Amino acid sequence: MGLVTDVDDENAPIVLLVDNNPMSRRRIEQSLRTKEFIFINCEDGDNAVDVYSENLPDLVIMALDIPSMDGHVAALEIREADPEARIIFLAPSRLAQIAEDATFSAGAVAWVQKPVTAKLFDEVWDKVLGPIPDAPGLEDLDKLYPKDLDKNEEIIGLPPLGDLPPLGDLPPLGDLPPLGDLPPLGDLPAPAPNTSETIQKTAKGLKKKAFILTIILFGGLVGGYLWSIFGDIPYL
Image (cartoon, rainbow, N blue to C red; front, side, top):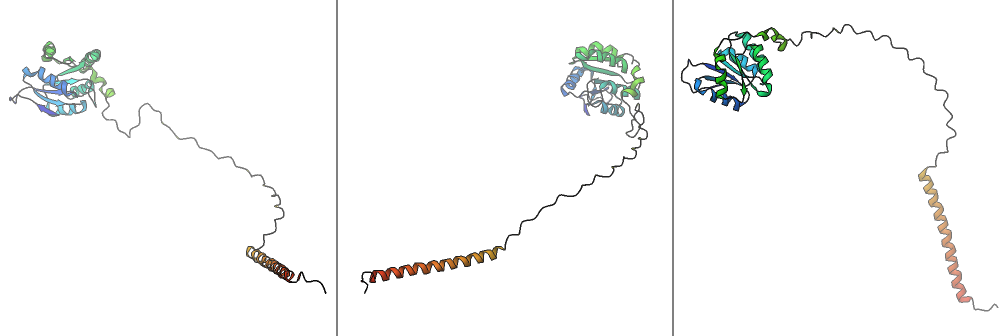
């Protein structure tokens, strides 16, 4: 919320301007510059209701397409709090029919098409200063925007769940079939001999064979040597 005014007179009329578009608000202020209003700016419908109650402005200029609470419902909230509230709606041409319906429902004095101009305000100014219409939409305000909805209250329209039906006893699983006799494993192979013991026996055998081979080779060499010396000697 912001207070925008170049007017020095504290008794100047106060206008609550509700629109979340800063450029649109600026155009409205410029269009009504000759009226010498004091402007209070607000950007969403929910906050606009509180600002109205705090300041009781002479005129409310409210866009229909605003956040948190649309302009129609916000206007109804204001009219409920103050039946003498004087409201102008703002809407683009594509929402003309909605603006007409909202104007009738909330008892607004007029609606002005966006983008606004001073000429458009002049065309409806006689209505703005005229009598304030009734607001037939107040009868449906609770349906449009329920105010006292408690999170813990029963949701209207939904039947009670009631007691859940019992699950009942689960059927017995029954006895599992016997597994039967397992087949015989058969004769197990003989365990392998001790590894270290096997290695020792193998080493002893290799040593014995090597010793015999050495003797044979040595004997052959000795025999050959003797033959070379005495082989040519005739037998006596």
